[in-house]
Amino acid sequence: MDKEFLYDPLLDDELLPDELFTSQVAQIRTKENSLLSDQDINSLMQCPTYEDCIQFLLDRGWGPTDHDTPEELLTLERDKTWALMRSLCNDQQMKAFDIFRLSTDFHNLKVAIKESYAQKDVPNVYKSGGNYPIELFRKTAADNDFAPLPLTMMRAAEEARDVLFHTGDSQLCDVIIDRAALQSIYQAGKATGNDLLKGYAELKVAAANINIAIRACKANKDIDFLQRAFCECESISVQKLIAATRNGLDSIYEYLETTSYADAIDAIKESPAAFDRWCDNRMMKLIRPQKYNAFTISPLAAYVLAKENEMKSVRMILSGKLNHLDEAQIRERLRESYV
Image 1 (cartoon, rainbow, N blue to C red):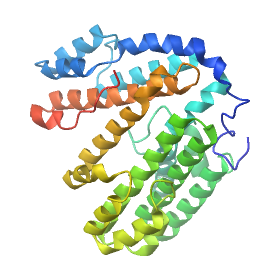
Image 2 (tube, helix red, strand yellow):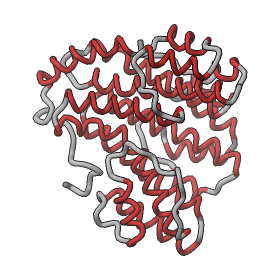
Image 3 (cartoon, rainbow, N blue to C red):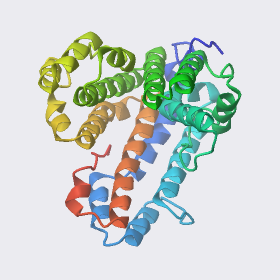
């Protein structure tokens, strides 16, 4: 492994020639028929009880039912998605999907460092489904030896741990690791050479930068914090965003008016949840044309993203039913479907 990359350099023309994906794309087009449509999501919303929602999902191929919580059901559905991808792709091809699990890896690294600092295990904070086993992060953090990790992750872990153990500054620890996660996602997207995956990485990093700017402006963070937190990408100028952030919310909105995210401003002003929904809907618009691209890995990647988007909506509905939320509160958070 080249430790300058989070994973092996990905997907050049020699690694994933287009003709390899014609049969896989044909199979994924069939699987798209099982995705929940906007009409299905509306029907799920209309179910009177949580139990009725579960039965609706079982009838649509979700399950089985021996799971006590919505999160367990969703985890099973995610596992089924990855099992499908492994059935369609060889090991080398599966590396294209590493990018989707990077956020989970860096989250688990952050948790492991904080556990080491607190010297106690914290239950139910790790996330499953990353590229690396949770125990690897626990061991490297406990041993204060991050050499087994890829270089980008190793450097971030060493710096974050040093900051936390010497200053107790948990927020700065988060900033260091979160920025490294964004850098790795962006690097992985670029390395694939695939338009969909590059677009995914671009939107992921740009949206994170915008969220950081809004929160930092409201918290009156200094320039040192901003320079540490933002991650470079093509569609957002970090230097212009820093200057705007220091001048106030209106300056951030004025800068965004000059970017491709101008139509997100109303959602940003409404709430963080509304902006997250805007980002997910924009991603659906980005990936929908890929279902007709029969000679690349893009339709498979689009299916993974569509399934994640679907699960977000299902999670919101199930949680809303369990907590007796008003239907309007749930609907305003629902994403557009892929199909």
